[in-house]
Image (tube, rainbow, N blue to C red; front, side, top):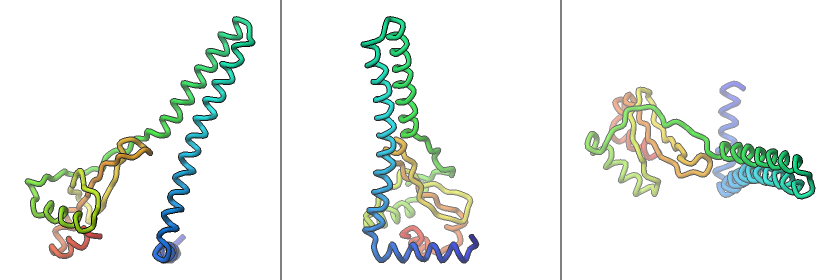
Length: 173
């Protein structure tokens, strides 16, 4: 795929979303439900398999009971660990130099004003980076379960190259 084809694809997606943003929300919710459903199905399969081995213990002789108990416990612990590991992924925080309210009071006043006007979530940390870019990064604290920490990354070259009004527009975007 070349740049022209990519731009056409992005434009088609953007225009489709602009016409019906509710459909996008439903589509995202559907895919999230499918993902959670697969995780719950995996846990259900683990519990059913382990329960099957525990149930066989009632009809087995002594050595069979011990073997079924061990296998059922291994399946239960191993399968539960695998499902929990899939849920609790770790994403490292972005790299940059953190700045505080005391170091840049005007920037934080602007961020507070924009946040109030746009009704957006607060940033837990504002960081400077060497790239000519600006970005928001959400790092989940509980994996797919959420509770994200929000980072605003501001490139120092971007801040130096633009007027305060342009920086305001970039931050609002």
